[in-house]
Length: 81
Image 1 (cartoon, rainbow, N blue to C red):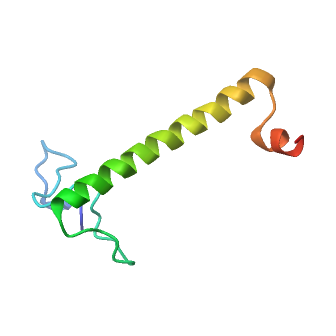
Image 2 (image 1 turned 60 degrees about the vertical axis):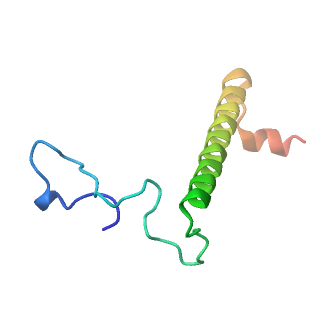
């Protein structure tokens, strides 16, 4: 119930319509209570999370590039150390 409007209530010409009060990244799942109440603090945490995700994608691309170059997977490289 956090992000998208129920498809039954959504106009036919607007599939995937987002709710008015939806903030990207806020899925109302915070069992540890880590989400800040302040909007500015939330924006800061959201930016940090995006940067962390981008760094993880670069690392995954590095693993794929290494495997494409020498044909060995990451586990074979770790075992040969």
